Image (cartoon, rainbow, N blue to C red):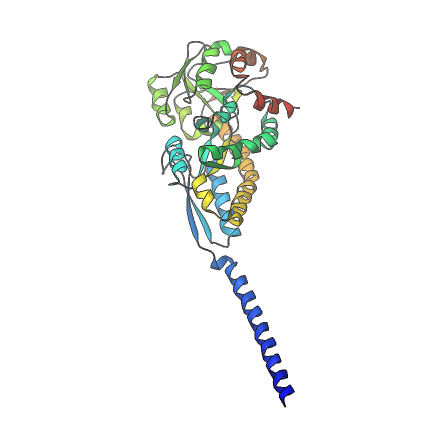
Length: 338
């Protein structure tokens, strides 16, 4: 009788332990499900219109994050500079008051000097050469280095190449002499214009249209979609495709926001950013071709540059001046040239 009591007690203890293990396992599985994790809502600032290729890339990124987190993480895209211009948005990114943005490396160079290399003229032979560098170890490291500026680089987006559009026709570097050309506010762009004999006129992007109309400036420089969507073609009708700069975009997060995320969420968001790149590139390529066609339909005279050597020779002094400062980056760019 005593033996039976010990046997029954043993069975009860064993069964109880099994139930405890099963209960713990169920609780742990529940705690790691998407439904049990806190819901997150973020804002992404974009300066361009809703149908612009970078904006569409932003939206693809947000869509992938939403899908892969099963709706737990939502990123709302605010286009058309609703949250401020690029410079003011970057300041808010650093403070953590805006969580994500898409920014031009031209603007970014004011906050992180390494990105000034993209302002140097004619350092890439073509689009493929640029992307080989962006996807190289150096290109990836530059995104990581943004953490020193309280930002977290996620991926690069395409923005094509920048070319001159002017009131009077330009067919060679000599034709730019004496022209007042709007540039982004940074030293390299100003020196680039000086090397070409033009008069650099820094001003905000939103002021360019009226400045072209009133003759305050004789021209500006940008990619075809920007020339079209900003309506600058209505004021000046000559476009020479010299492709003097290739200034990529960066999709980024606030470092303050990034540090608050779990490692799992960081991986999800980073991969979504990388997976949105090809879509953005494809969208850009189509948009750029369509933009050029529309510019021509609207009376813009487009001139192709068949020999880039005279242009490179004209700006050689700029490369020489900044060669030491960007030695590592320029060597990495040359390394992936074909």
